[in-house]
Length: 328
Length: 144
Image (cartoon, rainbow over all chains, first blue to last red; front, top):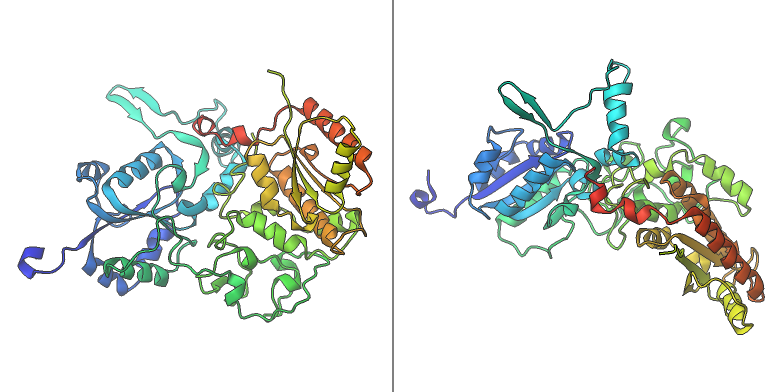
C-alpha cells in the first residue's frame, strides 16, 4: 500500500550494515522480538545484509540522503568496510555508529596490539591447522583467464567508524541492549527533538557503579587483584572490593548492569562515561589509588596480579582510545 | 634537522615546581627541552594527561612530586606513585619505552637536582630518538 493511498506519513527508510563485526549487533535488532513488527511498520529496511538480499550496486543507485537512518555496526577493517561507510554516509540522513565496534573499535580492535603483517602471519602461516610452506598470502588482485579477481584491501589498523566518516550518534554496547534501541528508534520515528550531533544515545549519563545494586563501602583498598576464576564471589559485595577488576567505574551505564546481575564483573562494553574520553585511563586512575601499599616494591607486587592491563582496560575501546594502537 | 627531544613535565605546585623555580632563580643552566605544566599536586595527574602528551608528540613525560611523606596534601604523591606504576605497566605493553616516562621526587630546595634530572632525561631521550606514538597514529600508516 503506498503512502498516497493510506494518507499516512511516509515510512522511514532504514539501513543496517555490518563492517568488521560478529553479527551480534544485527541479531540485537532482531532481538527486539515482536517489537520488530513495530519497527518495520514505521520503517522500510532498504539495506540489511543479514536479512535482505540487496546488493551494493542497489545502494549506489539510491539518491543521496534518501535513507533516513543507518545503523552501522562493526569496525572498519578493510577497504570494503571503508567504501560502504562512505557510501552510506552519502546516502543517509542520520548515521549511527551502532555497538562497541563502530563506536570505539570493539573486540576486533584488539588487533591494534599488532599490525597487518603479524595478523597475516598468524592467520595464514602459524595457525595449527594451516600448512602454507610457500607463504601464500591474500592479494587484492589476481588475474585469471576470465578476468581479474578482486579482494578488499586489509588495513594495518582497525578503525572506529568516526575515523572514516562523520558520525551523527553513537549507540554503545556489545551488543546494544535491544530495549535501548527501541527507545532511540521510537524517538526518531516520533520526530522528537534529537540530542546534539555526536551524542551517545541509548545509554545513561552515569557510570555502571551508580546503577549497580551490590553493597559498596567507603574503604576501597586492594591487597591483591584476582581474576574471576581465582575467587569465590560472595554475590553481594562490590567486585572491586573483593579484588576482582570490574570496569564499572569507567563504564557508561545503560545496559542495566546485566553482567554484574549475572555475577560477572563489568567488562566495559558501553564505553567511557560522559566527560571521559579514554576508558582505560579512567580505569587506571580509579583502581591505581586503591592499591593498598606505599612502597614501590609492594606496589609492583600488587600490580603483578593484573596480568594484562592493556587488554583488560581497553577490551572494547583500543582503536578509539588516546593511543589508538601499539607503537610500531 | 637535529633531533631535539620534547619533554612534557607535570610538576606539583608545592615541591617540584618550587624546586624548578629555584633552579631558575639560582641561574642554573639546564637543557631547554622541557615544557613545564604546574599542577597543584602529583596526585592530581590522571593517566589521560600523560597519554595525551604522548599522543600529541611528546618524546618523554616527566612527573615530579614531593618526596614520600612530604606531600602538602598528606598522601597525594602516594596516589600518584600507585597510578604511575600501573600506567607504566600499560605504556610498556603499548610499546612506549620505560625511560620515556619518569616519576621523580623533587623538593623545594632541590633546584640543582631538578636541573640534573632534566639534563639526564634529555640525554637519554637523545640517544633513544623520537617517540613513535604520534607517527603510529598517522593515517598513511594505517593502509600499509
